[in-house]
Image 1 (spheres, rainbow, N blue to C red):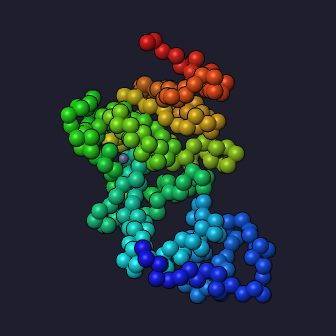
Image 2 (cartoon, rainbow, N blue to C red):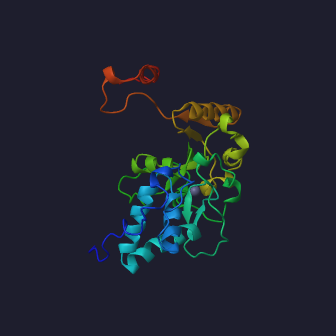
Length: 281
Ligand SMILES: [Zn+2]
């Protein structure tokens, strides 16, 4: 993009203003430097609220927007608007689902687990069904010749993940043909996140009542795919306990050595997991 606007950053700063080094406060408490037009200050303030964006980055991004063409800048604004207006949680699995006709009420999408919570998770159900649940049917559906984007999914196998982005990562492998359930976090007693804050009740309802499951089919297997962290493991144990009495097979993802790694560099915990999870070749 041609730079029609020579970088005006240094100009508005007055030497007699409060020294900038005096206000490098933590994110959240930062305000854009004085001297900018009010609308630019507002843009910088909003950008600085984004995760991982510090004060310098907020200024840089704001100038990028200023230099962009009107079309480019509005495309960004519209993309933000659309994602808030159109995205809902799937009413079966809590994956993100696009509402194309915009006919559903504006229900907030639950926050990420980093916010501890999922206070919004329960209210975030629209009538939407995600593209994976929409393709659920009974039985094995592995047909390598079928188009992956339209291949039917086995509603009887439910993989449980912490958040939608874990689901996306697993989908990238192309090697799973079941459906999912997104917990919207993991149990974290330290942060006050208990079973009621996650979508555990909905998961159990899917197991207990095929009518609540994708494709209306009975759940045969639950694959626990939580992160291998202390909290993830705690959540796995809790779910395994809850599912024990139910007639469903419960498995969890293998853990151990990453492909391409070397034994001598692996940590003790990873090696112990790998030994425990050894299998016949
Ligand atoms: Zn779904």
